[in-house]
Length: 387
Image (cartoon, rainbow, N blue to C red; front, side, top):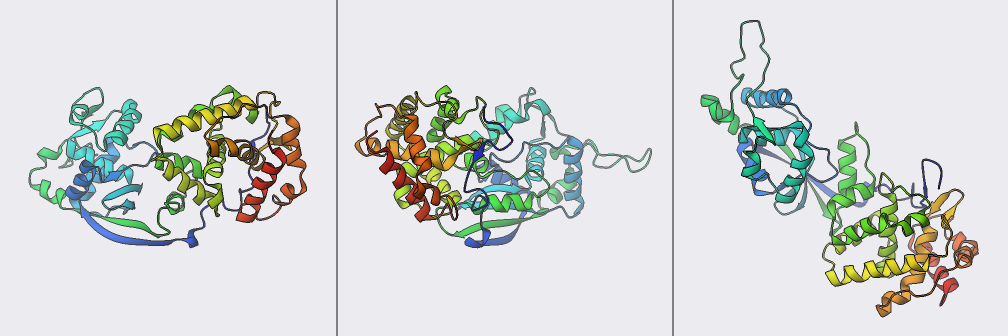
């Protein structure tokens, strides 16, 4: 088993693993949406909660204070939305506030033990269906739970629901919240800046890895194939660890291998942007192609059957560059002919690539530059030949 906290030697780390924000043209436009408009956005499916966001975590007391603040006109923090396309937004910062408003208007508050399940329903439906809202297994009634300012001096909003706000109802409905709409104007067809925007607005939390965010943005049937392969015992043997990586690094390695195999001729840095573009492309991949890609990598894993565990590990860590070069070289001819691998890949082939001076030189500096990526792939192809 590969030891240590970092199991994977990725020569892109520190080079382009984080988004270079100055590569993008980004606009941030303020809009003041009232409460009714916000609710309509959620109901219509225009607002989505990306998968890398945490679940709804507020308790009913904190949600009640937000509603009270809106009724009284007390300023509340602004919300940040990322415009994915026209009339479609991801909530980058402000989920708790927006969902509290939504739940209050529905007059229902989510039970704590059902929030993960409700999150899945919301992601799939774009909203929460009425039959779920009305289900007491999922929700309790939402009446404002507010403290008394003085003994025997009850808060006038305490225990009110949306429908019993009476004269305060229109006051609440028309209250506005400042929304900052962030849009990536260029380059087009690439949402990479969303990573950095999210992380900079959530500096108090844990910075997510690109693959963790990529998974929620570009999930597809192709990604389901990667999931399936990632737990395959043949792949786990090559990785040298039976347990999938918590931050999906091993799944990203599979993605990189396929991306370079399919689109390597058009590779250009950064690797983050390249993988984003490929992931987005794979969302529309045909079922036939997906089936072939699964058969191809399974034949590759069979071809690696005689390789020892951890064969791609160098200096105690799985070497990503070595694996992807061998994978592309081994599968390049097969994918061109739409065939599968039948011969066995021998350990000395992998070792020959690792000991090749041109290959090693292409790992020393600027490893994600086009010329170095191309050099590594070409050298592996030349060394493996017709294995």
